[in-house]
Image 1 (cartoon, rainbow, N blue to C red):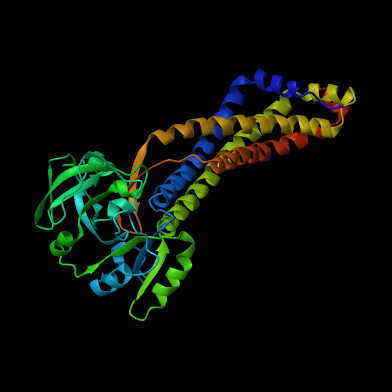
Image 2 (cartoon, rainbow, N blue to C red; image 1 turned 45 degrees about the vertical axis):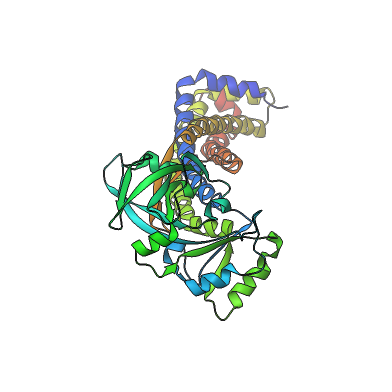
Length: 388
């Protein structure tokens, strides 16, 4: 004979105040837990979606990013003539030699400078990035000091409108367009002509060579050919893997930090649930004795109190997730540790984060309710009926 679930729910409703406080504590912990995971997920998704699976990034061996890489013109020309590179409708190779440098621009909110990626692009750079669309203005004319900026740069930094001028590298650069790259890292970049930027920053080498594969399944063959060529000291990675590698360190740090903080906060929520359940046991001693006298077994009493505690955890988990989901409406920025530049991204709620958060809330509920439930189930029937 089992105790109906409605019995447990009515008891929680009777103690509305303590029930609400316990659910609120658990919801707060789940909110923090989900928020940190969403932060790491958003960062990783932003960088991974920056790349395309049929694009290849070639950089110097052992260089962690384009900022640290250098490819001289001879090596870039060798890469440019590799077989297996896709050809467009005009018969031109889908390859771009690019340069990446960092500059400091003042932010609108604080007026303090922050590092921004300046990408020198080639003729095919835009074609290689299907996710990048010009939303306002036009692309810069080749050989000029014109630039286009990502929508995140336009939103967060000063002088971010079409027609305005940015000054860096001892030159004035006129903004002729704003591009929308969606929720990708390109939205936090400034693009200009690669050759002009190389002259401006006195660079003798490109940072990377990007090309599209004619057949994505032949990546390993092309990778082996590039990396085994004695004339080259370069490595090739799929663009998606290149950006995923950039996100791993910071995403891992955020997850470790978030889980550590959540464990500390969860101790308070577990104690709150335990106090609530102990109070429930103390107030229902005679009731527990009556249930035992009616023939309900110890395991039935144990299960009823555990169900109450799990229900507290479940409601707290869903409440915390509902509030955490609103974080997706906000865009924040942080430093990309791979390039030491500012990167704007949004919180991202994934199915994995949802079930992990609910599981975590149930564990809190179970942990907080198990000892009071065991105490309730071990009560002597005679003493419980006397209210002792």
